[in-house]
Every structure is written in structure tokens, then in C-alpha cells.
Length: 354
Image 1 (tube, rainbow, N blue to C red):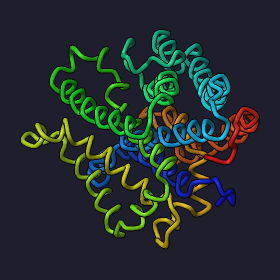
Image 2: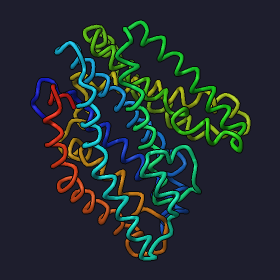
Image 3: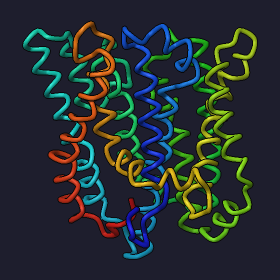
């Protein structure tokens, strides 16, 4: 673990869990694994749950960074904030997108120019192009970028009580949007884009960030009073919701409320593990291999879409696709991400909050 007093425990470990959810979920399309994987594992592993973990962590950290900067310096330098976001997200993503573009030009894969452009502009989540596996995951990056554009100006105007109200409203709206999307999918691809279906997850992270900033001692006491079984109940709820959300009888409840339950469950797990405690799970989340995997999570998330594609190719077949994925992701992190992250730190007032 990092020794910085400002470093928040378990964040990298939870990022590792998130990317493992995505990778394990997508392994279900690997031809040599599809039948057995879906029979034994795929039925309760949901890649979108991994993405939602990322969303809550993002909302939490971005809120904490901005509120810390405002408290320490009296204001927030929005120009530097956007520079940091660009340096964090753009280089590795455009490297991946350039790779996909080259393969498309060479005729090795099929990706429409419309899909590539929507991905490059971070608007793929508005479904303005035909779905394409190789860039499908860019919907989540679009949601995050739209959040970064809207968030700072709005959130910095809120006090803690107002943030609580905004969070509750987001839960209600998110539930309604998911119900409408399920009921009328053919009419809702634009105005019910991924942003509106997942904004409440970002809002949960934001609200926890507010509590951590303004009511940290109270939040720590809440975390300490939780019995060890509570995070396991939350995790069980996440898995059960995914397994039964499309049940022909239960869907009327689980479609609007199931993902909201997942949202709150992830929030509970976050609150439980961001404070030091004596716990085997806490120790695992903060062990060196997990924190290292968490730091690789962005590159892993980008590149898994190509190497776990379900195509009948050597590099897309198990288990070599996982081996190649890790090698490429390590190279992406150390050769692309890390240099820009080091440069990004020049625009960060509190460099140790991660």
C-alpha cells in the first residue's frame, strides 16, 4: 500500500474487482468457453456491475478532490481539472482506438467509421451508430466524460443537505429511466442513453464523497458499527439481482429497483472498506497484487474488448487471450498511462488523493 496519509484504502482493490467483473463477464463470448462458462459462472457475473463500481469510485474520488481543493485554496481551478481528466483518459483510449482504426483499414476487423467517430467523441452511449463489439465499451467512457463536463459546475454549488436531496432524486430518476428503457427500448435509445441509466451510480459516489469531506468522523463511526456480515449481504444482493432481474414474474420489481439496490449495495461496500479495519477482505483489497491490478484496471478495461472478442482467432482464444491481454495492458500502463499520470500531477493541488 502507499504510505501517503491522504491515500484512501481499498480504492485500487475495488478497481481490481470491477475490472475482473468485466473481464470474467466477457469471457462468456470466448468460443472455447461459452457453454461451460455460462453454465457455471456467467449466470451471476455481470460486466455492468463492474462498470457501476467504476462509476461510484469515480464519483467519490472526483467529488473528494474538488471539495478538498476548494476547502484548501478557496476555489477550484476548473481549467486544471479538465486538463487532469484529459491526461488521465485520452492518451490510453486514443491509443486503443488508433489500433482499432488501423486494423479496420487493413481489413482485419469490421468497424464502421460512424462507430469509431462516436467513440472518439465520447457519444457512443447515445446509440447513434450500429453496435460494434470492438468499441462497445466506449459507452461507459462517454458517460464518464459527460459527467466530468456537467459535474464540477453543478456540484460545487451544493451544500451537504442539497447534495443529499440531489442524490435521492437521482435514485428515483434512475429507477424510472431503467423501467422505461425496459418497457420501451425501441423508442428510448437517445433520451434514455447510458448516461441517464447510470447517473445515479455516479451520484452515489458523489454523495459518499460529500460525507467523507464534511462528515468523515460520522461516516467512520457508521463504517465501524457495521458488522462484518453487512458487506457480504450487500454482495449477495448484487449477485441475486443480476441473476433474477429478468425473471418473468419478478422483473416488474427488479427492473426498476434491482439496479438501485445494486447501487446502494456497492455504496455500502465502499463505505465499509475505505476505512482501515481488521478484516481478511480488507487485507486482500489492499494487498500489493490487488492494488497493482487496480492500477492496471483502465488499460485492462480498454484492451479486453479486443482480446476477448469471441472471434475464431488465436489471440482471441482462451487462455492465450488473457495472457496477451495482460502483457498489452502492462505495456499500455507503463508506456502510455504512467508518463501522462506523472505529467498530470503538475496540475493536481493534492496529489496523494487517489
